[in-house]
Image: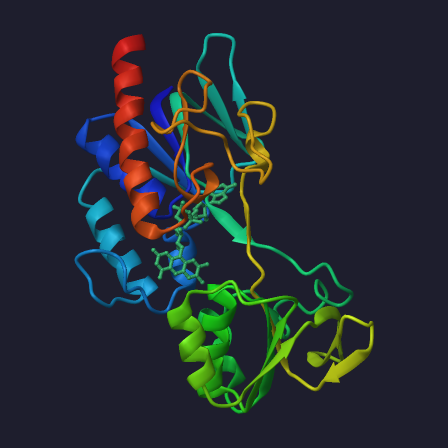
Length: 301
Ligand SMILES: Cc1cc2nc3c(=O)[nH]c(=O)nc-3n(C[C@H](O)[C@H](O)[C@H](O)COP(=O)(O)OP(=O)(O)OC[C@H]3O[C@@H](n4cnc5c(N)ncnc54)[C@H](O)[C@@H]3O)c2cc1C
């Protein structure tokens, strides 16, 4: 029986783990990886202390900091969460059960899917969800990016440096920061297809064609070797259904102190219901959750 289990090793979970270690809590961090979405981020210009840093570099700094403490880390996927009769928790990774008196859920978000024919079949063979990670593989090739927010526009800008042609497929208007829209307009080789939606991905071994359609249903074939889907993120909250309350976006509902309403259960970062999703906010949330969990443990055990 641990004092605390933290689920997720992004900025929220790693910061919570450092704060918990400094309170000498017996903590288990269960995560699929260390870093979370920062792994997909090429340029970070808004994390204080670093005017410019890449995602992998910032992960390295977080990891070095975390590993200064005796971190107890299990690399696994959490598949279930239950509150036991005595108020403690069981966290399941498949058949494996871990127990703790308190839990912080910091499992973040994952890319949303298009849901069109061929998407699943070609994932990893031309369909991707991280232009920063996979962009260099498309040097000299034609690619399409789907989406109209910051991530999609940044992906199109990054890809325009290596690809021979970039099609940006946007259903409606841009929902990106003005500074990003300005950078996009300055990027060469980007053709914006506004008012278009995805219809399907086709090819042989790898992607050869992306079919899109305009508002009137007229289809257009794009001869591309890569399709990057950048249409937003869904929270990794499925394992908490039935224990924690979710909001309409399937985020875990919390108050301003990261409490879920279930005694001993807290949620921090992107998976939680706060409106703003940023590294510095997730890290701050993680710190808060660990301090609140510590208070809970002091009062109850
Ligand atoms: C392309 C992109 C660019 C961005 N750029 C910036 C930027 O420049 N500046 C900025 O401040 N923010 C940026 N963000 C947002 C920022 O990355 C997130 O707000 C932040 O990473 C959220 O941290 P988190 O710890 O809550 O979740 P995440 O980073 O999503 O981490 C979640 C962790 O939980 C783990 N996990 C998930 N499910 C499970 C499970 N079932 N079992 C075990 N482990 C699990 C994951 O493996 C991961 O380690 C960007 C996001 C994206 C996608």
